[in-house]
Length: 271
Length: 249
Image 1 (cartoon, rainbow over the protein chains, first blue to last red):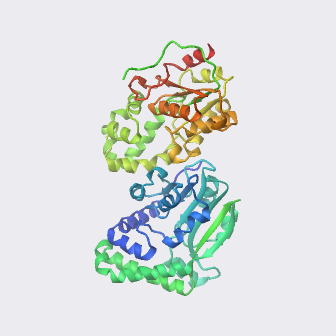
Image 2: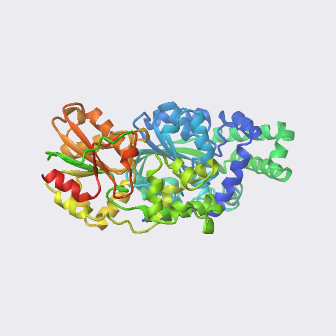
C-alpha cells in the first residue's frame, strides 16, 4: 500500500507562500492578476477556471479530486459552479483550514472535504473519483510519474483529468534550459515530454492548449501590481522577500518572452 | 425519553441483513486511539504524554466517548479537549494516518459465528469507513465473501453519507439487483451501534416506501446506550448471537 510521505521542503515553501497569499493586500493583488481572491498559488485565472466545468462535464453527481488544492482555488469554485463534490488535497494543513472556511463562506461545505496528503501517495481506494484536477502542481513535484500513476489509480476508467503545468519550452537545451529551470517553479524540469509521462502512467491525451501568453500576461499584471502597491506589500512580504519576488517574476517574464518557459493545460482520459 | 425497544421478539423472515462496521462488526477502538494520538501529537501536543485525554487511555473510555457524541467535532472538543482551531487542523489528517496505521482491528466476539449463521440471508456492509479498509479487515478475517456488498464513504457523494440512507439503497441494489423504486415486499435488518445508524435505518425505510420494512437493531456490546438516543431503534441486542436466535426463530 502506498504510504503518505509529505515532502517537508515543499510543505514549508507552500506554507510560507500561503501565509502571504491570504493577507488582504495580497488577495487584492491576486484579484487583479487572476480575477479571484482565494489566496491561491497557481496561475489559473478565473477565465480559465470558468471553462473547467464544461470540459470535465461536472455536475451534482461528479466526484472530483483537486490535488494541490491550497486554499481552494479552483476546487471550491468548481463546487460553486457545478454543485460537484470536491475533495481538496494538499500537504500543508493550514491551507486546508482556510479552504474549509472558504467552502463555508461559499456555502458549499457539504460538498467539499479536505485531506492532508501528498499527490504521490493518495489515501484513496482505486476508482474513487470521476475527475481530477491540478494546477501548477507537477512543476512543483519531483516525482511526476508517480503522481500521474496515483492519479490514474484513483480515477474510474474513462475518467478525465485536467491539469495545468509550467515547463521548459520543448527543444531548448544548455544554458537556456538551465535558465528555465532556475527561474521556473521548484521542479519545473521534466525528464521527458509530459506526453511521454502520460502514456507511461495510463493516460490518453485528449487535448492540449498552450496558455503561455495568458501566463505572461498574468505575470505582467503581478509585477505591475507589486510595483504600484509596493508600500502596501513590503510590510506583508518583508523588504527582502518583496525584492526577491519582484526580481524572480521579472526573470520569469524575461524567460517567457524568450520562449524558455511555457504553460499548458492538458485534458487527458484514463486509458 | 422512554425506550421503545422490545426484548421479546417474534420470529421474522428477513431478506437482507445490513451491518454498520466500526463498533458493530469490528472493535476499531485501539486503531482509532492510535490514530487520534498521532493527530494530537501534530495539532495539539499539549494533549500528549501525561496530559493524554482520559478517553484515549483505554478502549472502555474511548467507547464511552464515541457513543456520547454525534459528530466527531463534538468528540474532539468534549472528550479530547481540542479547541476549534485544533479540530479544524485535525480533520484533514485522518485519512492518510488511517491507511498508514496497522493496529489490529478484531471482530467482536460472536460476530464470525453470527455472520456464518446468517449465511442463508444476503448480507452487506454500509459504513462511513473507507470501503478498502473494510474489505482489508474482512479479507484478513476470511469474511469478505460473506458480504454481497460493501459500501464505504468513497462510494457515495458527500451529502449521501450516513445518516443519509443512500449507502443502504446502493447496498440493496447490489444485493437484489433492483433499484429502490422496484424493491417491494422486502424486510431488511440494519445493525448498528450509533444513533446515526438508527437515523439511517429510518431514512432507508422512508426511501424504500411502505411496501418494504426496515428494522433498526442497536447493539450494546461496544458500549452504546440506545435508551438515550433521540431516534430509537426497533430492537436492541447485547450480543451478536441474539440476532441469529431471533432471525432463526
